[in-house]
Length: 361
Image 1 (cartoon, helix red, strand yellow):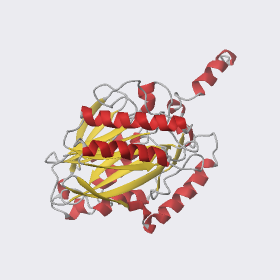
Image 2 (spheres, one colour):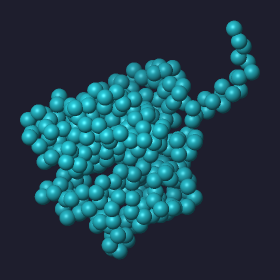
Image 3 (cartoon, helix red, strand yellow):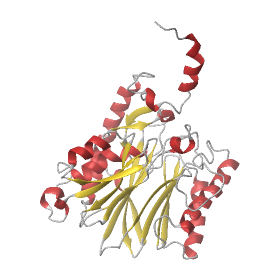
């Protein structure tokens, strides 16, 4: 069975705030027709900020052309609705005019995994808004390699064997697979630089997939700034993997991520309920939601809104305090990203205009 999570920003209202209900209705209609036609086993349509999330199960495998075309066509029809409503950035993440073999490299974010459904199959779909794909590096390390977060790494015979991290170099488009705990320090040397190295997949030592992320980089695909990547992630829980509580525990700390306003700032990653995943302050702070499911023969049982739990209230309070601190820097770093990460904004235009006025000393 394949689990596919495919998302896109096809229009927000107002501005970059949220997904209009009509877009959700349009997507649900398309996916329901696909389920009746036996293309899908089951589906859910969710939203995080201004990103429409298509969560699907099927038996067509990863990178299935029919499933990817379904997602693309759904986003196209949603974009038509968005244009009629004059929503902001209608079709923003659709960076191509026509569908080819699959949706990769066309703008939307994709996380997919092939699994053999276990006797009990709990999974979490993490969705983010106003940040980049490297935002998952920190929690994935905590979940699958840090015993201070996941006690199963110490006391569970199944989990204590450790995990393999498949790491993608976004610039060179190359991957390397490294083992934890054996190569823990080398893993950190790479994924600590989350703007370049991102965790793509995590496996058990028996090659059973436990997590997968979307790693599409919009500015690298388009060659210009068109919005942040707003990644999605699928994580399996229990058994050979960390427990549900260990999987969501890293988000009790609202660590800093890149994105926020115009994709050009550092901001705290705030865990919120589905309802509160609508960033307002300075188009933020960046949000993360967690949809918990049990799978039953490919059917979704859920979702449970995992960050609705009041035990995450303090994380939200910390995020607001961090947002206050970061915003007081205004246009100065480190609130604003460094120059090397501003190359897809209007900053190069400013430097071009001032070029003749710079004098050698």
